[in-house]
Length: 281
Image (cartoon, rainbow, N blue to C red):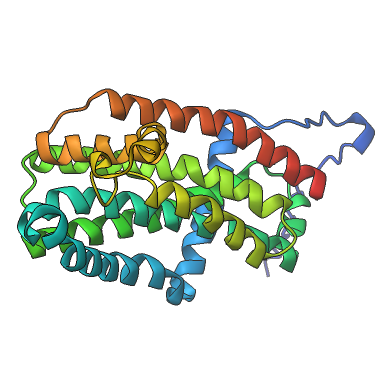
């Protein structure tokens, strides 16, 4: 009879390094920051998937505003709806997408009130990731609002002379500028006490800027004392840039002014928002 002896394989040894001997770092790299931002953006998209009613403002508002403003003001301003579409569609596009950026600050305030961001602080992630991730996820909302507005215009008879390239460039310009503006409302969301106050403050700022612009009527039809404000209004520059791209296919001075303004906004409000967020936390 043969006896077989089984020799157990040696277990792998794990060396535990004491905490005092570990090399710890209190900074994250740019690559890690980008990775954390994308992860937080994915969380924001999951929220939209689970609560699709959050998209009501970006799906219904472009349709209602396009139909309402076009048929109410088209005959009075341009003589007929067909001639008014190249004027009003860029205006409604800018108004709708910029107004949508208010939701960033409102949802940010709601998450902070629920303690969600307190849990994020305990994680080894970039400090800016919860904020930048939420703002990145909201670009999906801007894309939906932009697509629906342009689609409604095409259905009603708009034929952009700038071609597909001009339309795509105009859409990207609006989305980029709206993303930059959302940093302002994110700052309001951090410093405000309630989500309703964020929405109230934001609308108080946006409504004058939007309606006291050339978005719906030409500036030369307004009183002289009002034209100076309309001409320096940043919303007017963005609307003019979108019109030039959609109707002429040209990337003019107003487009560069809009991009420069967006860069300045991000450079100012991104650090302010992160600093205020960390101080609040």
